[in-house]
Length: 121
Image (tube, rainbow, N blue to C red; front, side, top):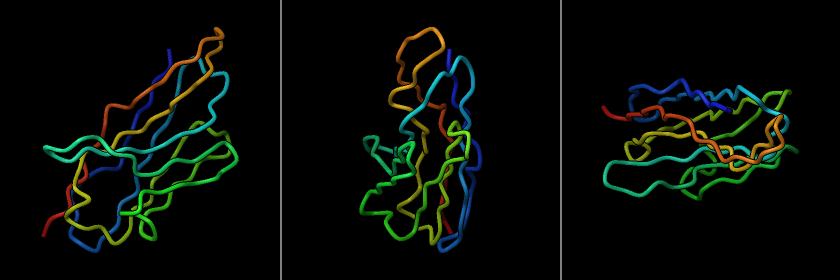
């Protein structure tokens, strides 16, 4: 069993910053890629950013230059630094590990429970 727990969401004004955190725990042998997705009200879930175990990052065009994804040295936590936030960034943000190898030798995809980010004046 592997769990992802997110934190750091909240209410901010346009132009302000937030930092989201996601920590993986459980029967983890190895995690390669990690990522952040978001889902705004009435919209489909969309990719925000991903990062590989080698710290190669990719971003959605809508957040390039404003958001930064990073990982801890143990490679089981991922962060999303969000600057210059806009009302259209309002969404529930989900942490994702598309492929974790467990200590039992199984591959799983894992999602966090989500954390709400609201950008409003």
